[in-house]
Length: 225
Picture 1 (cartoon, one colour):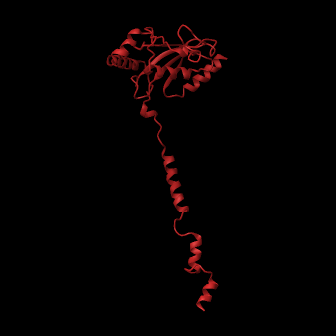
Picture 2 (spheres, one colour):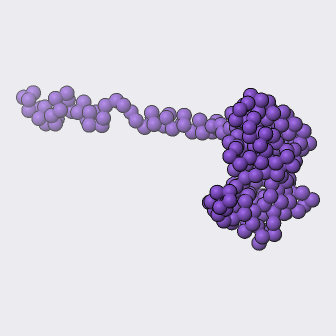
Picture 3 (cartoon, one colour):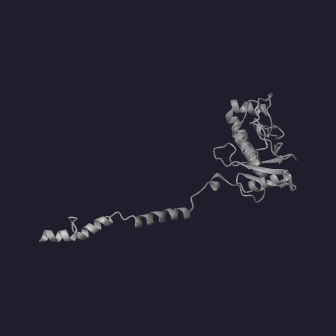
């Protein structure tokens, strides 16, 4: 069952612009994942963050693991590139960490929801229990210095862009109205103008034919007599 579920998820994610997925050694249980940050307001915009996701045979009843190929200087990334994030922790409540079952892995989760959570975590770090204490301290006390470290990581990440892969940008992925839609709108208004003649009504035209006083023709004749 795990193979079938993972293949369907892999095919779905392969269509997305914000992530690049490849099977490692054609193994459906091991993926190379390139996270692409398309939000221009993000500190990580323009980066290609390569990582490995490894799935257990019991997936989706057990969570995958996620490890960056190049460790990021981030409060929630260990020096070896492993990521600390609640959504990848084993199911159930954890009294030690204070995490509820709703924050942790569940069979309802999918690869896409994990990757979206990771992208969100990059700019919204959890500093209360950091994997990298120094990064957590710098983020709180020296944001300018932290920002420089992030920019350095972004530049290093570009070395992992696969040969021939065209990096998407915010501009290239933004929705643009098609010319066809614009033409349809213009034709709609032209048709409306033709159908809605804002001159006199049919009743007004009939009155003009009978006479300006609005009386039937025979009554007009009697008045003339």
